[in-house]
Length: 345
Image (tube, rainbow, N blue to C red):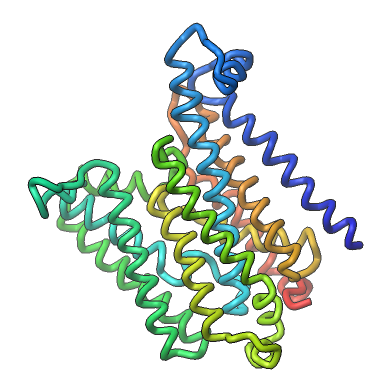
């Protein structure tokens, strides 16, 4: 049985390799496979534009999808475990709502620039959007961590996160009402989700932050397993539940805020992927569940990114138009069969 569970990890690994390669070869511009291979291995190509497309567009986009999918799926798994709620996801604490509020302030109030604060040190363009999203999500995370020192109940903390989400949505609605049509359009486009927002120069920063969040998640595997049987049981095993919860909030905050800042609020991956992993493994043991969740998250993100470029000349399909099609049926299945699925074994 253990060997079969480990073998399940090989399937998403092989799919990741295939989908990663497909993301490099497929796109709006048809590039011969031989030319793509030559470009990747430093060879010369007949067209410089092909080299730019492969190295500066497709490669960063594929790597971003790989890391973003793993980040959102891992964050979703940790939140579902700590809140003992199979329907908890990255949006449940309002962290991505904070990112949305930060972007709304930049796009709708300041016209896509933070240069209003200083003529000499103004930040404009896409960098201001990333900065606004990151600051917004970190501020909400700080509020959640602060509240966690007073609120011991996970259910109450969950409700606080939901209320923060409602508050930020209300502010965004007010900003949209008083904003220009161009600002609302830009904000709507950002909200659809996109893995192409990380440039080759920004990629090391993006991957480093995600790697830190994933590393903390791996450290928390044993406490998460203890938490499956309840906080009292975990405390009896020597787990500092309060400190673990803060570490978990920080890890999920890093994963969600960085991903949302660069890629927009990607829906359903964090909510759906942990359930797919549980259904495949038939266990909630995080020693196997977390690695499989991470791999499936990357697989689905790469698949969604590949589907988004299929229309080619007609443009890219927004990610949030694809992820619900893949994720909603899984959630419906989980709800209908919730009594048959074992979450704490």
